[in-house]
Length: 164
Image 1 (cartoon, rainbow, N blue to C red):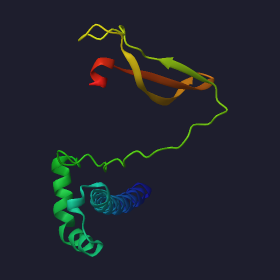
Image 2: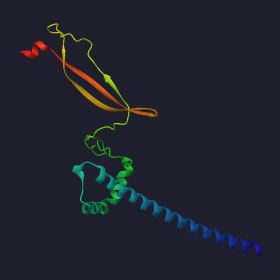
Image 3: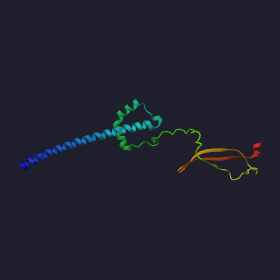
Image 4: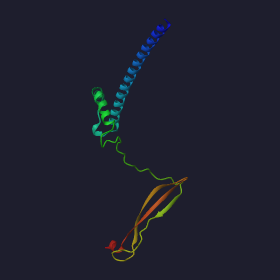
């Protein structure tokens, strides 16, 4: 009698554990579906924010699209692996650089002159004279030291052709 009662108790415990397992599997599947839905919504928002400007959508249109296409987009992301199409790298255009103003005066600076090899005019053989220079200031970072490098490129011209 004890053996049959023990068998009945184990059978009841097995059916209870089986029911709990089935409930946990159903809960996990629901969580996976919710996660896929949220990932699809996130990818749509990323495309809207970071995608090309020609493909921007009104937020109202986006919510309609998400609700109508949720199942299809999840299947499409599974096929494509969630990658963006060719040419859509998720980055916008870089803004143009603006002038940053004058560099600080308290930092040490060095002057570098980049000059030409010969000061003789190739046309007439006379000596070239300096007509101006281009100066570029750049930040020069050496480990544990900051300084400015003034790069000077003198411009030369032939006196014979300037006079005529």
